[in-house]
Amino acid sequence: MNITIIGAGNVGYHLSQRLKEVGHNIQQVFSRRTDKVLRVSKIVGAQPIDNISSLQSGANLYIIAVKDDAIGDVAEKMRKKLAGNTWVVHTSGSVPATVLAPYFNNYGVFYPLQTFSISRMADFLNIPILVDSNKELMKNRLYQLGETISPKVYRINDEQRAKLHVTAVMVNNFTNHLYAMAEDILKKEELPMEVLIPLIQETSKKVSLFPAKEMQTGPAIRGDEDTIQRHMAYLDQFPDYQKVYQALTDSLKRMYDPK
Image 1 (cartoon, rainbow, N blue to C red):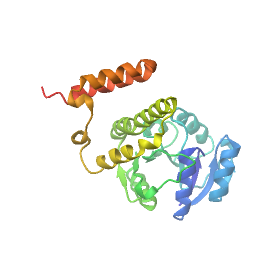
Image 2: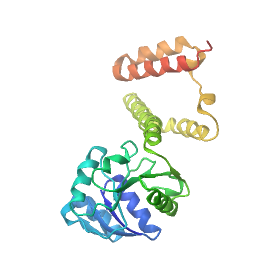
Image 3: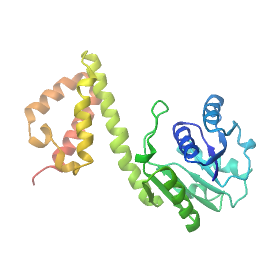
Image 4: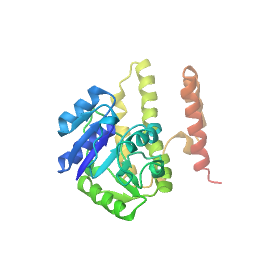
């Protein structure tokens, strides 16, 4: 399949490489950042463009991999260069496919559900691909495209994907923020973060084997108020972290209240 990637950030960087790796042709890669677009285009052998006005027609699929709030604006600019029946998707987990409806007749979503970083290679064999489209034929083709890069492909509509994205933020963004908070505290106390790594790994491993609720431990569900108050007293020097600790402790108590 001939594919054009709109966006050379984290998602565009990894997705274009994976598509190229399994045999798809990357026709063009767009980014306003010259350094980013040159980096990606060099790897996948695509024509680099830093202006939508240089967009060429003829690709089988155009994948928009930009910030959520830029998808509509980018699609509007693309419509000036492409026919209305062009196949266009975006890669967002939270933005509905219908954001593309004012500009293209065939639109959808091709969402790799993973956190991406340039510094770490993505293992697409373990990345779910969520697809959707307003046309059944396009939806089936997107599913087939997903199967070429991952064994885990799901047909997920806008409403389902929006709810799934809420949980994705919880298990990824929120937990990573907690890691950053822990790093901050440990750095202040001149303690190594590596001491917590086995605990983090074991917690993550358990959730892939058992229901998370059954694996919960800690002072909140034990009713260990003395420990909680000692923690809260220590966190007086970190007011923001103290609020997070209190909120999560209260939430745990409500979830595991035997009443």
